[in-house]
Amino acid sequence: MESFSINSAKSYIGKNVNLHLKDGAVIVNVHLTRLHKGAGKNNKQIEYHLTNRKSNRIPLKAVAYAKPLNCSLMQTSA
Image (cartoon, rainbow, N blue to C red; front, side, top):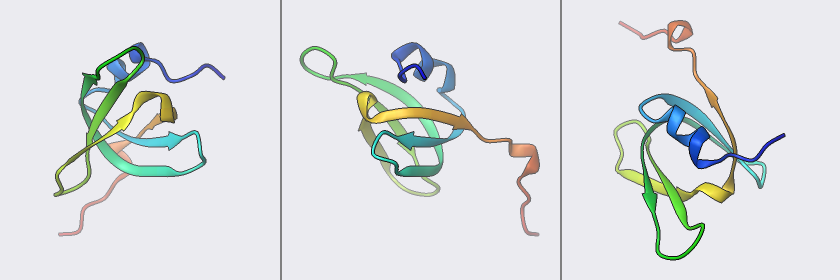
């Protein structure tokens, strides 16, 4: 499996995904908003929003892969 790169991250900006981290954790149903370039080499971070919360950042090198969510399968309660 290839590593999660900046080009992969760019393709998910503006979409809801599940972020699978290299340590085995999963951040569920987040909206990816933008990429940040940190100081130094390879210090890029991806910014995401959880539902009704402030934005958070995570280093791009900590992400194993992102799995897009199929919003048509999600139901809302009325």
